[in-house]
Amino acid sequence: MNLTAARYSKILIGLTVFVASFAFVHPVHALRFHVQNELSYRYVKRIYYNDTTPSLFESNDHYLRNFLDMTLSSGNLTLDVRPELRLVDSDALSLTETDPAFTTYRTTRRLMSLDAQLSKSKYQVAMTDVDRLFLTYQGSNWQTTIGRSPLGLGMMRVLTLWNRFSPSLFNTGTTELVFNPDLATISGQWSSVAVGAIEIAAQQPIDRIHLGHFVYYGEWIELQAIGGEWWERPIGGVAFSKDVGGAQLRGESLVIGPSKTENTETQAAAGFEYAVNSRISVLLEWLYQQAGGQNSRDYLTRPVSRFRPLFAQAYVFGQMTVNLTDFLKGDFGTLVNLADSGLLATAGLEYSISDHFDVSASARIPTGGLDQEFGRIRIVDSPPTDIGYPQRYSLQLRAIF
Image (tube, rainbow, N blue to C red; front, side, top):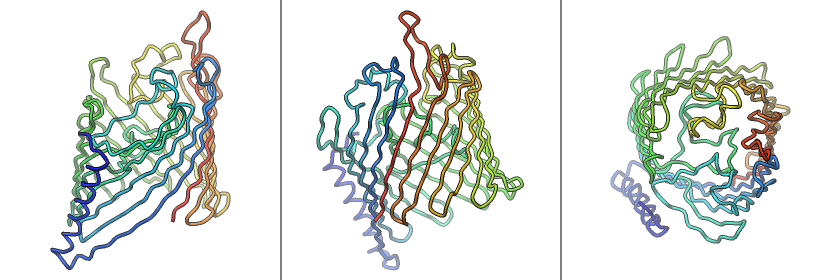
């Protein structure tokens, strides 16, 4: 299914007329309309080890994005539309998909192609796109959504197993863009139990997801379970969240069935978050990947999998967040690879200038050496050729009006 800009306009007009007609047929449901604009600029610099990508030792990316959030609602029906104007200036645009800088990232081709290219040169591209376009119906104890919409799954904050739809702190790819999926969901809640189904559509079968979702909201624990088919592999998993003495304990598990090239594998994650006082909180998380490498020699022999963005079998991540003032927040963390003892340091600052404008900066600095994931891995002995984990620095300005 390939929708041009003209066909998208017809869909948008049709959905708008549908919601407006609902208000007309049922006058008691007033038609409500809300508009908000968001403008953001992000600068990202990556520094690669010299032998990693001979064509790209240092990359500089500029992302200018303007979103127009529009919400039209009447009674139980709500239509959310978020068109986008995207300008990208990036060294990576000149590379081919076979370049090593692209090997760790692949963009999903969504079912609806609602983007249009305005201009393109070697290092710049200007696009229009639709970030969100979905219709929601809210019943007395159930809800259904269809269209292009954000989706979040699971309990973990950083080392996530279920949430593959948000930017990852440890993504090594050359893009900062993560796109909302085209989906259909239906869920219902009765007392403390909720059940639902999630269908994510895409042009290629390898990108499609079909899941059932169960949630139990208990007085002393929240439990979740999922099962179905994910990227052409059968999966099942459970997750929990529980408050113990003021600390929030979380956990996720995922059993991934076999594919044509891989065997069944198990993944597990657990962690806790605790507010020391009104200004300081700490986060500690642990990740286990059965199919991950047990030492650096395994990294290049294991099949590449989107279920394993990190190479090794086990990791620990610790982070401290400090509210330095009422408007300035900082976080400092470290990811430890337990297979090769390599460290990845992370740091971030966020300053809220007002309710409508904020500035943030972040850094991700690998500190490992030879034969460490957060350093460099030798792929050829003669002549010596290494793949290095990139340093990453970013600055973002965001305004809402």
